Image 1 (tube, rainbow, N blue to C red):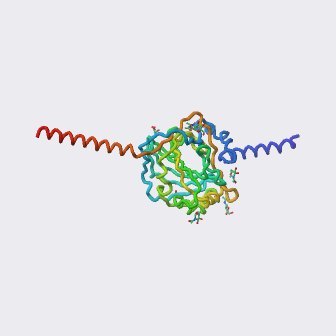
Image 2 (spheres, protein in one colour):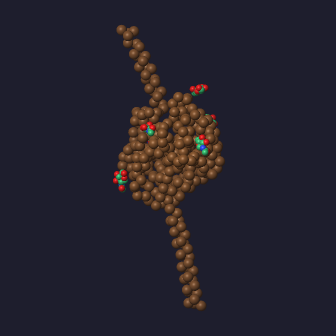
Image 3 (cartoon, helix red, strand yellow):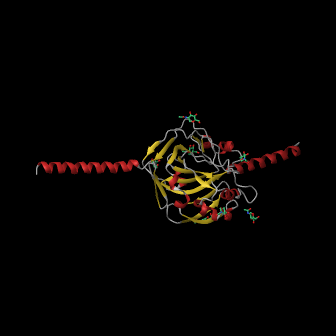
Length: 305
Ligand SMILES: *[C@@H]1O[C@H](CO)[C@@H](O)[C@H](O)[C@H]1NC(C)=O
Ligand SMILES: *[C@@H]1O[C@H](CO)[C@@H](O)[C@H](O)[C@H]1NC(C)=O
Ligand SMILES: *[C@@H]1O[C@H](CO)[C@@H](O)[C@H](O)[C@H]1NC(C)=O
Ligand SMILES: *[C@@H]1O[C@H](CO)[C@@H](O)[C@H](O)[C@H]1NC(C)=O
Ligand SMILES: *[C@@H]1O[C@H](CO)[C@@H](O)[C@H](O)[C@H]1NC(C)=O
Ligand SMILES: *[C@@H]1O[C@H](CO)[C@@H](O)[C@H](O)[C@H]1NC(C)=O
Ligand SMILES: *[C@@H]1O[C@H](CO)[C@@H](O)[C@H](O)[C@H]1NC(C)=O
């Protein structure tokens, strides 16, 4: 009897060790199993979400502000097996745009599909875009991304959606130049770029804002999300460069690395439109007031002359 029973016992042990190995990582093959290994992924404030274009937008007179975004940066571009990630270092900051504090930008990375009908994580009116760029930043009150990521007020992520255009988008040049050097998992290569050249700040005027999560495990609900309404452009040739990456060592293409949209669970999504008129208006006010004072002086000087 013992000789009959021992092989299944060995098989079970092998199966258990394989399972625990797999649970260290995660896969896009079935994102619904993430909560089994990462419980926060089943939370009530998860990302991405579907955004509705018809919500009324609130006017904001406060543009986004950067520091060091025109500095030339040399950092690693890495094939993480789940994305293409470019480190930004710690000097570049983003603030204003309705944010309450300054955030230090840590990295940016992309999500894309096997074809251009899918790829983005956020959708607008259920429409998927072929590519989504995430600029990840941490509240500067925390010392690092790792220190901030598990705090409700820790992170801010800025999402840019792309639409297919005929011409290459030169904003992506610094990424495209070395993409062939990071084809396999864990490959990395130094890239030199200015963040200002990668993100098109002219598109940062209308945006959705809500509280959500990291879109990958641990799925921490620590993100103040900003998703821009104006899209950037990308060519099919550039999309093919993303799709040529591997999630391993040359066997499986890294595509469809997007999490499906999550339930809103009653959260409020705000939409903001930037307008410079508020600032201009206050200058007009100052001008009118000075003019009135001047006219009053002239009036009295006439009376008492
Ligand atoms: C916005 O669109 C959604 C779905 O398309 C619809 O359910 C909702 O009623 C609309 N809201 C407004 C304010 O028009
Ligand atoms: C790039 O990544 C490699 C491997 O992780 C590391 O040894 C190297 O220090 C990194 N370079 C920079 C500039 O961070
Ligand atoms: C594009 O990819 C999606 C997701 O894998 C798939 O469902 C769809 O059939 C594909 N569309 C085309 C036109 O190949
Ligand atoms: C940034 O982090 C600090 C420290 O936890 C916190 O007091 C502050 O409210 C945070 N700011 C925002 C806007 O989340
Ligand atoms: C921080 O991590 C703990 C343990 O995983 C989790 O219960 C909590 O929800 C996390 N906090 C945030 C803001 O995600
Ligand atoms: C467009 O980008 C692709 C991918 O980087 C490149 O192979 C091609 O030469 C570029 N075309 C032009 C006209 O620059
Ligand atoms: C990946 O494949 C290359 C070429 O087949 C091989 O030289 C290299 O050792 C492999 N790396 C890993 C981590 O398996």
